[in-house]
Length: 405
Image (cartoon, rainbow, N blue to C red; front, side, top):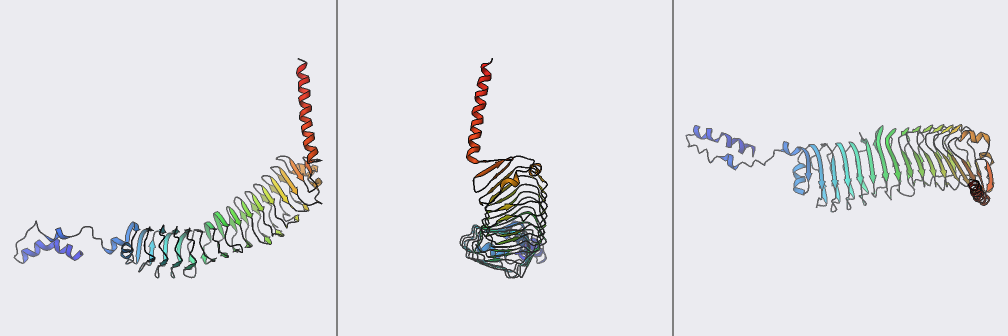
């Protein structure tokens, strides 16, 4: 076609040389299709929108694609990326319910994000040479169970994987991620990654009941939420920039030996098989401390160096004693409720404890329904009666006082 175009431009001169008449109103220029694009044009666009197999075949001739590739409402069962080796942009495939397989035998890198969303029939992603990309964002791919990448993925800044049938996630090489969010993958039993920092959000939740999470190099997370996990390795975690919550897990032991600071609230809730806990280095909590309904924890003595709590304390459970020996300042209130018969609230009513807890009242109750509020120990029923009587007495006094005037 390009040859045809150049011949059209040169044809009047050629006809003169050959001694033929020139008809300027009827040259080959009129036959040239101005919509034609060279392979270079096809490979370089700001956005490549693919809606059909014909569109894909055109793009698959490129070795390097510059621009974002968007595939939506694709009707064929297979996407094959042919000769493409690099995508200098993002790759997004979404809302294609007929899609069963994606194959890119030569693709090595995606400089932007790799997004897969709402692909209800996709079961295989085979990109055997892919080793470098910026982010993964996979959501609602309910039967995806097989992915084939190169041994490791480098350059990642963000990973989100939700609602798949994957059984294991590993092979990510990145010192720092902004987001690591793995949730609602019902068959996912193994999650492993080697990042050292997560600067925005670390969230793991609602995967397989026996999920094993290993983050052996993680030293910092901004926000951390880990739920529904059977085993957890955070051996190198040193600090959390905001809140940390460990809720509804099934691990029997929780060891965070290097964790020294949580800037927000620390929540340890409803971990019903947890019996051994170690926060040996934790000295300050910027928000509150919530330890509640961890059925097998009998002693709240796993915070031996805790010195400052910036919010309130709430301890609820079957524990026989609660000891925070190094605690010097609580800026909020304290609520302690034990269901153990032998729990003694007297330790929480001392003058020393009152000097530590400066932001509100101290409430403590035990299995005998004995309640202590700000140093006074009475039964809950008597407390209510006394409170009502006090209000009644005050009303009589005010009426009498009013009658004097």
